[in-house]
Length: 468
Ligand SMILES: *Cc1c(COP(=O)(O)O)cnc(C)c1O
Image (tube, rainbow, N blue to C red; front, side, top):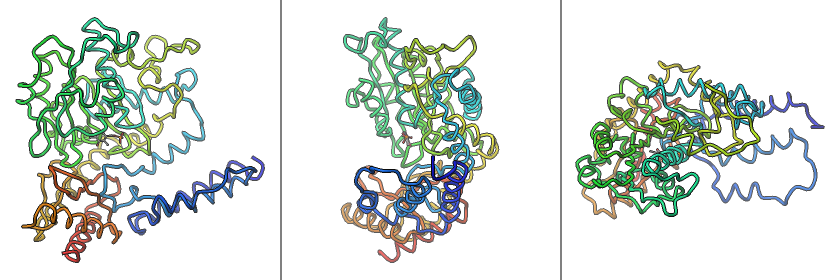
């Protein structure tokens, strides 16, 4: 690097980042620029010659900032998205600077060891069996993928088929059972694993999106066929949890592998105030959860947790003979994820858990759930605003207008959402629920306090009154 020393360059980036983060609360809570504006801003011919490093970093910040969304701010209620906790961001700077390839424990001893420790902490916090293995992946989608790959491996092995070596052609068919309100990315995982997103038996759900256990018991095949049941902790619209104890009893009775998608909801288990919601989730065989949602790690980070470590390793181990293998009692990071070379995600996970501690995590989850309940109560008190679910966690859905036709109600709800977004005090999103358009509130960004929730409620009510 000719024009600039690395210390100056890192300080420059740190100052730009700090300036962005310390002013986020007072900025409009939406991007100023759309994708097409951003595309025009970044568009340029392929660079032919060098530009000084500090000029590049300055240019990047200047160009990108108008098109940055605001999940790190206190007004973000739009999607189930974490807020990149400052401790995680700082740890991530070190992670990038250290440049460790977390594919192998001999290639990256510190990165591999920190994962081993963070994995044990995660299992402890989530009250899952200590013998589980954990893969550090990019997010919930890949966590579901890895867990379901382990499930596929195990149920087929029990049927006498080694899917890792033989593939799926000619394998005994697997029957997958999944709740009707499962997250769309679980279907992506099924799609990628050759299990098919339509080749499933969908189990009806109740009005909060919870799988109906009696319907599962009725639909599940009695035959000796390999089976996977996919349950959910935390439905993205209602925050609801499937009845795990009943589902686990059915899974156990029928010899099925039970997987739980708990991208954000599994964190209820780390918070005594709401842990009851996720009771029995520990009876499953595998769990997918995110670091970059409730734990607030920077993007990207998720955890694939599997009770049967042999199945987990069988499904994921890379057959790369030139790399030294892990010894007795050692954990090789690449044995639990699809990748070999990858980012050392354990550092940010370790730093955030070390910073917040069990109490800090429990406090944050409880605070978000309290803010959600308080917002729902405030909005419900306003004529013309309806809350459509019981607020059991941090998620709720809202409909605007009363005594309207479905189409008019949809149009009005969309209009109110657009008004709230334009006002920029807070950011909310929309979703389709039971055929109707609704506004969705997620309280999951770490800085959000009761006062932030109150400010958002008033902004929503003000927008509603103006639109109405
Ligand atoms: C967010 C989410 C996912 C997908 O996780 P990503 O981190 O976006 O890949 C899966 N399931 C549920 C319930 C989610 O909320």
